[in-house]
Image 1 (tube, rainbow, N blue to C red):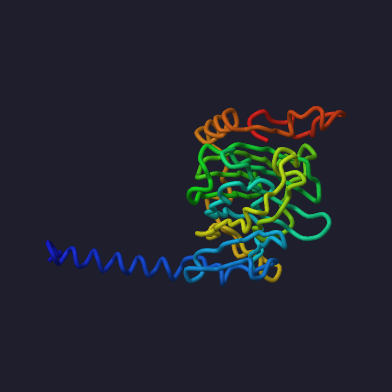
Image 2: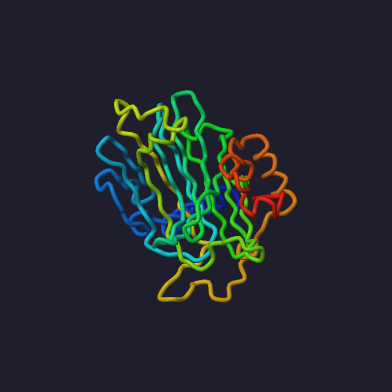
Length: 290
């Protein structure tokens, strides 16, 4: 006989408690999953490892990186950016390999004067080759609450997401001679640092250290859909997960085009002054996404 009335409520309440406890057990933990890379005391881990805060003052910034290395994956992080006058500061969240010919997939958030919008700066670096920047304004204030920033990286494509909306895609065009990051393992990194030589209005607005310390907050890191690289092999093996084949469908492409039309403020593929001898080859290979 199924429980009803007060008995049913008791069972449902018990299940909620169990579910909450399981969430705590299986939640990613900043103490367990990350190492502090610089800044020392300027990195604070709170709420039993569920919240991490980075601080920046005139002496130094701070940063952390994942203990694990990944080769492909879908990775999410919730971030709340530096509020108020954050001019000159950069909050970064990215995947990166090591060495002089490194690969990197970047989210960087460029600080602003109070009341001005943040700039979302994205880049894809392959074997040390830079100069693939796209920049956007966000359609919300990223300092008021946490928002989810995601990177999908598989052998076919790299897609940047903001709160589930695709904002940029960089496809694998190796068949046409375009480098694509797919051979080097990468760690997840985040940092808060001073870049007032370029970050805000091209470096014309400097960091106001009277506003320090600056704080950025991170929570709900999720790399469950990612291939961890251990001792020369991948945890995914012959995995058949959907994300390993994922690409933008018609709805995602439509949404991305709307974001780019409405909020993109810089695209390297239209910067003929920067590339007087001709735009990078990928710029002419696809008109759908770059």
